[in-house]
Figure 1 (cartoon, rainbow, N blue to C red):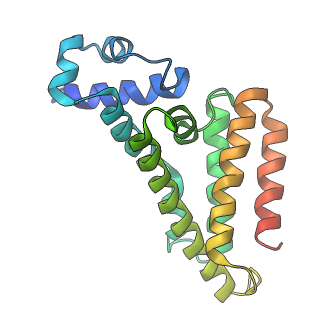
Figure 2: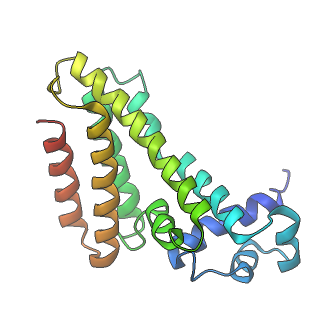
Figure 3: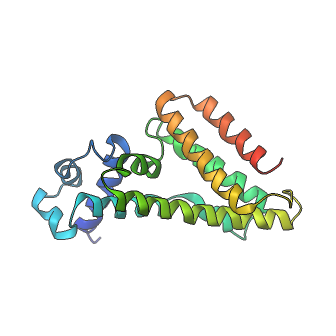
Length: 192
């Protein structure tokens, strides 16, 4: 079986380290150590920690179940949207509500000192908003969501609801309240 590339190992380690310790709280030595890589090899693959953070954000986003909202195998768009947030809650429960969302954490941690990272993360959020807005429009066509709602705005509100809930979950580590907030918030934003 081929060995995973050192670059991939560094990215995987960065996802975990940034998620658990934050951008500012994670150094290159911690990342390379977690990856089992010599520290000097980091710069063979990345120009800076900020460049790595962008790749780590993309890796984290790619592992998100956001694709559920455009998955035609689930006929009702409303079920796709609610299923997506159920899946996200399960992911958060899998880390015991301790670390929040890596993307939200990176956005906060890098907004002042690493604006390129923050802008990239905001672009990932924009992609999520667009996918959710597409699903909202389909749910409107299917008669499950009021046609009077602004689909783009609802998509943005859903992402912001999630990020706020994930942040608060990180602080309070209360899965029951987080589940209630997300479930009720999604329902209300969709006019249900």
